[in-house]
Image 1 (spheres, chains in turn brown, orange, green, yellow):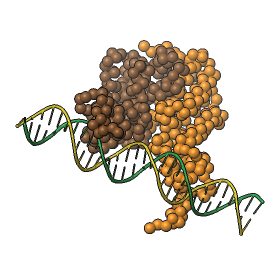
Image 2: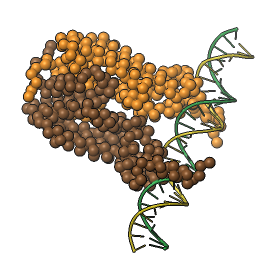
Image 3: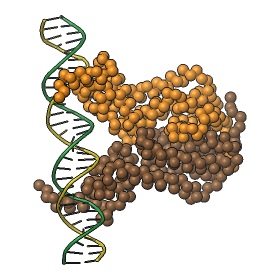
Length: 207
Length: 207
DNA sequence: CGATTCCCATACCTGTGCGTACTTTAACGC
DNA sequence: GCGTTAAAGTACGCACAGGTATGGGAATCG
């Protein structure tokens, strides 16, 4: 039979980090599970196993399970809203180049993980109010950015709104569909076409 | 204290239907929970409560919990693949009118429930293989229909694929975003713009 | 060097949910 | 009428998960 001290040692050796855990560690672990499973898969004991500690630690950092969910959401909200703004500046794109770099985003290398997190949160938001607020905020910020792009390109206000919404639909749709329909269209091909079609001046409607 | 017979009577009176339950009844109940919560929310006892019976009934109809999930998926797959084909015939639309009626779909009255089911299954499919197969099949059928539309309109094969994928992205994006960004654009306005832009012949790309 | 505080371990209680074994009731054939 | 079978009801075992209470070791501060 395993002694209590032996178990303690075994638990300790599982720890990756020897410094005390921070809230960020818990949030990261929870985010991982959120993607692999879903919100309901975020169990206290599973979090602890992932971090190599026991429940005593969790309930020292948080009062209850839902507190880590709130922290997760807060962190995502902050990261994501900042990302939108930063990607504007970072890419250095101008005019319709901004549209292109936005449309390319879901197909970027590291985007898969990011998109998976967002999709999990969107799914969560379908039934719970708290994540819905975060989603609405992110959606609003993004669409305002699209509006700016089309406004700069000289479209009138009504057309700006329509194209912004359409653009966001394309973006959102692609980030969902390129997983199952991955190889259907080439990335370069798709991005070119999307930019061209969305930025094309309104001509006559084909009969 | 409540007697055993009294409990039996109380349970019986909760039953909506007095005829024996069918597999379809269980699948319907499970689908309801799938939308309200998610796939992990489909608990055997919750299903039973919804149908006014006890676990004895469930385990007479199914061997284990996952069997009802399989049945649910099978039913959805069948319904959805049929729906795509039927909506083609039913609408009676021709040419680009077919595109319009497809784009209108997520905004139809009863579409909310249907879309919610699909989104729940898509979320489920992100982590499990079984629902993923169903999703891939549905995606393939839909995009083949889009291809037909654009092919009939005279686009070349490469453009057919690009536009089909873009169209599906718009459809998918709208069915997700119109919940949070519901009032952002008017339905009529959005549909007109989407059809116009997606069907517009390729002109010069604005600089 | 002693006490306090931080961070975590252990043990326990409770509720819930899956699955099983057995019993009960109602309809139906004969 | 009477046994048989379909369609449940009842009771139980058990594993997991949330939360609490308490204990322990290491660092830190006076």
